Length: 318
Image (tube, rainbow, N blue to C red; front, top):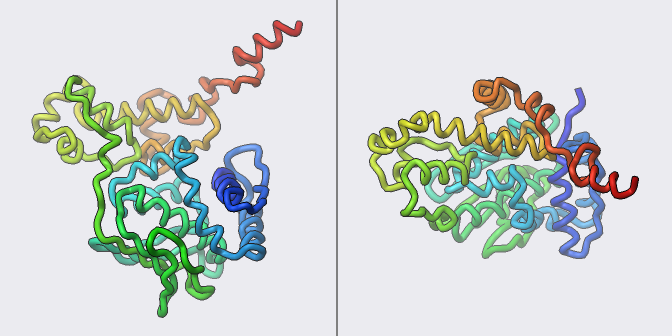
Protein backbone atom coordinates (compact mmCIF):
# COMPACT_ATOMS: atom_id res chain seq x y z
CA UNK A 1 0.00 0.00 0.00
CA UNK A 2 1.38 3.40 -0.95
CA UNK A 3 2.13 5.76 1.94
CA UNK A 4 1.35 9.45 1.97
CA UNK A 5 2.65 12.65 3.54
CA UNK A 6 1.24 16.08 4.29
CA UNK A 7 1.15 18.49 1.37
CA UNK A 8 0.61 21.37 3.81
CA UNK A 9 3.90 20.61 5.54
CA UNK A 10 5.74 21.00 2.25
CA UNK A 11 3.88 24.24 1.57
CA UNK A 12 5.25 25.44 4.92
CA UNK A 13 8.75 24.45 3.83
CA UNK A 14 8.36 26.44 0.62
CA UNK A 15 7.09 29.49 2.52
CA UNK A 16 9.92 29.40 5.07
CA UNK A 17 12.67 28.92 2.50
CA UNK A 18 11.30 31.73 0.36
CA UNK A 19 11.79 34.05 3.35
CA UNK A 20 15.48 33.08 3.27
CA UNK A 21 15.75 33.76 -0.45
CA UNK A 22 15.73 30.08 -1.42
CA UNK A 23 13.50 29.26 -4.37
CA UNK A 24 11.97 25.86 -3.57
CA UNK A 25 8.81 24.80 -5.37
CA UNK A 26 6.90 22.25 -3.32
CA UNK A 27 5.29 19.32 -5.18
CA UNK A 28 1.73 20.04 -6.27
CA UNK A 29 -1.09 17.97 -4.79
CA UNK A 30 -4.81 17.78 -5.59
CA UNK A 31 -5.57 17.34 -1.89
CA UNK A 32 -4.04 17.45 1.57
CA UNK A 33 -1.78 14.43 0.94
CA UNK A 34 0.89 13.46 -1.56
CA UNK A 35 2.97 10.30 -2.03
CA UNK A 36 5.57 9.73 0.70
CA UNK A 37 8.32 9.16 -1.89
CA UNK A 38 7.61 12.59 -3.40
CA UNK A 39 7.96 14.26 -0.01
CA UNK A 40 11.21 12.44 0.72
CA UNK A 41 12.68 13.31 -2.68
CA UNK A 42 11.80 16.99 -2.24
CA UNK A 43 13.39 17.24 1.22
CA UNK A 44 16.54 15.27 0.43
CA UNK A 45 17.06 17.37 -2.70
CA UNK A 46 16.84 20.56 -0.64
CA UNK A 47 19.30 19.22 1.93
CA UNK A 48 21.73 18.19 -0.79
CA UNK A 49 21.70 21.67 -2.33
CA UNK A 50 21.34 23.91 0.73
CA UNK A 51 22.29 21.81 3.76
CA UNK A 52 20.14 21.06 6.81
CA UNK A 53 20.07 24.48 8.49
CA UNK A 54 17.32 25.93 6.25
CA UNK A 55 15.11 22.93 7.04
CA UNK A 56 15.78 23.37 10.75
CA UNK A 57 14.52 26.95 10.49
CA UNK A 58 11.23 26.06 8.76
CA UNK A 59 9.38 26.22 12.07
CA UNK A 60 9.81 30.00 12.10
CA UNK A 61 6.96 30.18 9.55
CA UNK A 62 4.42 28.47 11.86
CA UNK A 63 2.76 31.66 13.19
CA UNK A 64 1.82 32.59 9.61
CA UNK A 65 -0.27 29.41 9.29
CA UNK A 66 -1.70 29.35 12.83
CA UNK A 67 -5.26 29.10 11.45
CA UNK A 68 -4.55 25.63 10.03
CA UNK A 69 -6.44 23.25 12.36
CA UNK A 70 -3.46 20.97 12.97
CA UNK A 71 -1.12 23.88 13.71
CA UNK A 72 -3.71 25.55 15.93
CA UNK A 73 -4.09 22.34 17.91
CA UNK A 74 -0.34 22.10 18.43
CA UNK A 75 -0.13 25.77 19.42
CA UNK A 76 -2.77 25.11 22.05
CA UNK A 77 -0.34 23.01 24.12
CA UNK A 78 0.16 24.43 27.62
CA UNK A 79 3.43 22.65 28.46
CA UNK A 80 6.31 21.12 26.47
CA UNK A 81 5.21 17.63 27.49
CA UNK A 82 1.67 18.40 26.33
CA UNK A 83 3.12 19.53 22.98
CA UNK A 84 4.88 16.21 22.41
CA UNK A 85 1.76 14.26 23.36
CA UNK A 86 -0.22 16.26 20.80
CA UNK A 87 2.45 15.73 18.15
CA UNK A 88 2.32 11.97 18.71
CA UNK A 89 -1.46 12.00 18.32
CA UNK A 90 -1.10 13.95 15.08
CA UNK A 91 1.29 11.28 13.79
CA UNK A 92 -1.23 8.55 14.64
CA UNK A 93 -4.03 10.40 12.85
CA UNK A 94 -1.96 10.95 9.71
CA UNK A 95 -0.57 7.37 9.80
CA UNK A 96 2.95 8.77 9.64
CA UNK A 97 5.63 6.24 8.77
CA UNK A 98 8.07 7.99 11.11
CA UNK A 99 7.19 8.69 14.74
CA UNK A 100 8.64 10.82 17.53
CA UNK A 101 9.20 8.47 20.47
CA UNK A 102 9.75 10.02 23.90
CA UNK A 103 12.56 8.13 25.63
CA UNK A 104 12.92 10.20 28.80
CA UNK A 105 11.08 13.11 30.37
CA UNK A 106 11.30 15.18 33.48
CA UNK A 107 11.09 18.74 34.80
CA UNK A 108 12.74 20.98 32.23
CA UNK A 109 13.93 18.19 29.96
CA UNK A 110 12.83 15.64 27.39
CA UNK A 111 14.72 13.09 25.28
CA UNK A 112 13.08 11.94 22.05
CA UNK A 113 13.96 9.90 18.99
CA UNK A 114 12.63 10.28 15.46
CA UNK A 115 12.26 6.65 14.43
CA UNK A 116 10.77 4.50 11.70
CA UNK A 117 10.26 0.84 10.84
CA UNK A 118 13.30 -1.42 11.03
CA UNK A 119 15.66 -0.49 8.21
CA UNK A 120 13.40 2.38 7.06
CA UNK A 121 14.36 5.19 9.39
CA UNK A 122 14.07 8.88 8.49
CA UNK A 123 16.56 10.62 6.24
CA UNK A 124 18.63 13.44 7.84
CA UNK A 125 16.47 15.98 5.98
CA UNK A 126 13.31 14.49 7.51
CA UNK A 127 14.91 14.54 10.96
CA UNK A 128 15.88 18.19 10.51
CA UNK A 129 12.42 19.29 9.43
CA UNK A 130 10.60 17.66 12.37
CA UNK A 131 13.25 18.82 14.84
CA UNK A 132 12.95 22.38 13.56
CA UNK A 133 9.17 22.43 13.85
CA UNK A 134 9.15 21.01 17.40
CA UNK A 135 11.88 23.40 18.50
CA UNK A 136 9.95 26.39 17.13
CA UNK A 137 6.78 25.24 18.90
CA UNK A 138 8.38 24.92 22.34
CA UNK A 139 8.67 28.68 23.12
CA UNK A 140 5.16 29.19 21.76
CA UNK A 141 3.97 26.71 24.40
CA UNK A 142 5.68 28.61 27.23
CA UNK A 143 9.15 27.00 27.35
CA UNK A 144 11.93 29.50 28.07
CA UNK A 145 15.70 29.33 27.48
CA UNK A 146 15.27 26.33 25.19
CA UNK A 147 18.39 24.41 24.20
CA UNK A 148 18.48 21.41 21.88
CA UNK A 149 21.23 18.85 21.31
CA UNK A 150 21.16 16.12 18.67
CA UNK A 151 23.09 12.87 18.45
CA UNK A 152 23.54 9.65 20.37
CA UNK A 153 26.76 9.11 22.34
CA UNK A 154 28.24 12.55 21.60
CA UNK A 155 25.35 15.01 21.17
CA UNK A 156 25.91 18.30 19.37
CA UNK A 157 24.19 21.48 20.52
CA UNK A 158 22.15 22.62 17.52
CA UNK A 159 19.87 25.25 19.09
CA UNK A 160 20.75 27.83 21.72
CA UNK A 161 19.93 31.49 22.48
CA UNK A 162 16.90 31.37 20.18
CA UNK A 163 18.70 30.23 17.01
CA UNK A 164 19.97 27.13 15.25
CA UNK A 165 23.75 27.21 15.26
CA UNK A 166 24.72 23.80 13.86
CA UNK A 167 23.31 20.88 11.93
CA UNK A 168 22.60 17.52 13.58
CA UNK A 169 25.32 14.88 13.15
CA UNK A 170 24.79 12.50 10.26
CA UNK A 171 24.87 9.51 12.63
CA UNK A 172 22.07 9.33 15.22
CA UNK A 173 20.87 12.78 14.18
CA UNK A 174 17.35 11.74 15.06
CA UNK A 175 18.08 11.48 18.79
CA UNK A 176 17.21 14.79 20.44
CA UNK A 177 17.67 16.27 23.92
CA UNK A 178 15.47 19.25 24.74
CA UNK A 179 16.00 21.35 27.87
CA UNK A 180 14.37 24.55 29.14
CA UNK A 181 14.84 26.62 32.30
CA UNK A 182 11.16 27.15 33.11
CA UNK A 183 7.75 27.59 31.53
CA UNK A 184 5.87 30.88 31.35
CA UNK A 185 2.06 31.02 31.54
CA UNK A 186 0.28 30.99 28.19
CA UNK A 187 -3.13 31.95 29.54
CA UNK A 188 -3.27 35.47 28.07
CA UNK A 189 -5.20 34.17 25.08
CA UNK A 190 -7.65 32.45 27.42
CA UNK A 191 -8.71 35.47 29.45
CA UNK A 192 -11.95 34.78 31.26
CA UNK A 193 -14.98 37.03 30.85
CA UNK A 194 -16.38 37.48 34.38
CA UNK A 195 -19.75 38.74 33.15
CA UNK A 196 -20.60 35.43 31.47
CA UNK A 197 -22.22 32.52 33.30
CA UNK A 198 -20.10 29.53 34.25
CA UNK A 199 -21.46 27.21 31.55
CA UNK A 200 -20.73 29.79 28.84
CA UNK A 201 -17.25 30.42 30.16
CA UNK A 202 -16.60 26.68 30.30
CA UNK A 203 -17.83 26.22 26.75
CA UNK A 204 -15.61 29.08 25.59
CA UNK A 205 -12.50 27.55 27.16
CA UNK A 206 -13.23 24.11 25.70
CA UNK A 207 -13.99 25.53 22.25
CA UNK A 208 -10.81 27.63 22.25
CA UNK A 209 -8.70 24.45 22.44
CA UNK A 210 -10.69 21.26 21.74
CA UNK A 211 -7.43 19.35 21.12
CA UNK A 212 -6.40 19.69 24.76
CA UNK A 213 -6.63 16.62 27.01
CA UNK A 214 -9.31 18.26 29.13
CA UNK A 215 -10.19 16.91 32.57
CA UNK A 216 -12.84 18.22 34.93
CA UNK A 217 -10.19 19.31 37.44
CA UNK A 218 -8.22 21.23 34.79
CA UNK A 219 -11.29 23.11 33.60
CA UNK A 220 -12.38 23.85 37.17
CA UNK A 221 -8.93 25.23 38.00
CA UNK A 222 -9.00 27.59 35.00
CA UNK A 223 -12.46 28.80 36.02
CA UNK A 224 -11.54 29.10 39.70
CA UNK A 225 -14.38 26.80 40.78
CA UNK A 226 -14.28 23.54 42.80
CA UNK A 227 -14.75 20.52 40.50
CA UNK A 228 -17.95 19.33 42.21
CA UNK A 229 -19.48 22.77 41.95
CA UNK A 230 -18.54 23.01 38.28
CA UNK A 231 -20.08 19.61 37.52
CA UNK A 232 -23.35 20.73 39.13
CA UNK A 233 -23.38 23.99 37.15
CA UNK A 234 -22.84 22.06 33.92
CA UNK A 235 -25.70 19.62 34.58
CA UNK A 236 -27.96 21.39 32.10
CA UNK A 237 -25.34 20.94 29.35
CA UNK A 238 -24.93 17.21 30.02
CA UNK A 239 -22.21 17.63 32.62
CA UNK A 240 -18.52 18.08 31.86
CA UNK A 241 -18.28 15.03 29.58
CA UNK A 242 -21.42 15.92 27.66
CA UNK A 243 -20.35 19.53 27.11
CA UNK A 244 -16.87 18.49 25.96
CA UNK A 245 -18.33 15.94 23.52
CA UNK A 246 -20.71 18.58 22.13
CA UNK A 247 -17.97 21.18 21.69
CA UNK A 248 -15.69 18.72 19.91
CA UNK A 249 -18.46 17.52 17.61
CA UNK A 250 -19.40 21.12 16.75
CA UNK A 251 -15.79 22.03 15.98
CA UNK A 252 -15.37 18.92 13.82
CA UNK A 253 -18.62 19.58 11.96
CA UNK A 254 -17.55 23.12 11.11
CA UNK A 255 -14.20 21.94 9.76
CA UNK A 256 -15.83 19.12 7.80
CA UNK A 257 -18.24 21.57 6.17
CA UNK A 258 -15.45 24.01 5.37
CA UNK A 259 -13.46 21.39 3.44
CA UNK A 260 -9.75 21.55 2.69
CA UNK A 261 -8.51 19.29 5.51
CA UNK A 262 -8.34 15.53 5.80
CA UNK A 263 -10.68 13.74 8.20
CA UNK A 264 -7.61 12.59 10.17
CA UNK A 265 -6.32 16.12 10.71
CA UNK A 266 -9.78 17.30 11.77
CA UNK A 267 -10.12 14.47 14.28
CA UNK A 268 -6.73 15.33 15.77
CA UNK A 269 -7.45 19.06 15.88
CA UNK A 270 -10.72 18.44 17.71
CA UNK A 271 -9.17 16.30 20.45
CA UNK A 272 -10.22 12.75 19.55
CA UNK A 273 -7.84 9.97 20.56
CA UNK A 274 -7.64 8.32 17.14
CA UNK A 275 -9.61 7.79 13.94
CA UNK A 276 -11.90 5.12 15.38
CA UNK A 277 -12.69 7.29 18.42
CA UNK A 278 -13.52 10.24 16.14
CA UNK A 279 -15.79 8.18 13.90
CA UNK A 280 -17.63 6.50 16.79
CA UNK A 281 -18.30 9.64 18.85
CA UNK A 282 -19.09 11.89 15.90
CA UNK A 283 -21.64 9.36 14.67
CA UNK A 284 -23.26 9.26 18.12
CA UNK A 285 -23.84 13.01 17.86
CA UNK A 286 -24.85 13.28 14.20
CA UNK A 287 -25.94 9.76 13.14
CA UNK A 288 -23.31 10.03 10.37
CA UNK A 289 -19.64 9.22 10.05
CA UNK A 290 -17.34 12.20 9.45
CA UNK A 291 -16.94 11.24 5.78
CA UNK A 292 -20.70 10.99 5.21
CA UNK A 293 -21.30 14.26 7.03
CA UNK A 294 -18.73 16.03 4.84
CA UNK A 295 -20.29 14.59 1.71
CA UNK A 296 -23.75 15.75 2.78
CA UNK A 297 -22.96 19.22 4.10
CA UNK A 298 -19.66 20.46 2.68
CA UNK A 299 -19.83 24.09 1.61
CA UNK A 300 -18.70 24.51 -2.02
CA UNK A 301 -15.70 26.75 -2.65
CA UNK A 302 -16.54 30.23 -4.08
CA UNK A 303 -15.81 29.22 -7.68
CA UNK A 304 -17.18 25.68 -7.38
CA UNK A 305 -20.42 24.80 -9.21
CA UNK A 306 -23.30 25.13 -6.79
CA UNK A 307 -21.77 27.93 -4.71
CA UNK A 308 -23.53 31.27 -4.41
CA UNK A 309 -20.62 33.14 -6.03
CA UNK A 310 -20.47 30.71 -8.93
CA UNK A 311 -24.23 30.96 -9.57
CA UNK A 312 -24.16 34.77 -9.41
CA UNK A 313 -21.35 34.88 -11.97
CA UNK A 314 -23.19 32.42 -14.18
CA UNK A 315 -26.31 34.62 -14.16
CA UNK A 316 -24.30 37.73 -15.00
CA UNK A 317 -22.68 36.07 -18.00
CA UNK A 318 -25.78 34.31 -19.31
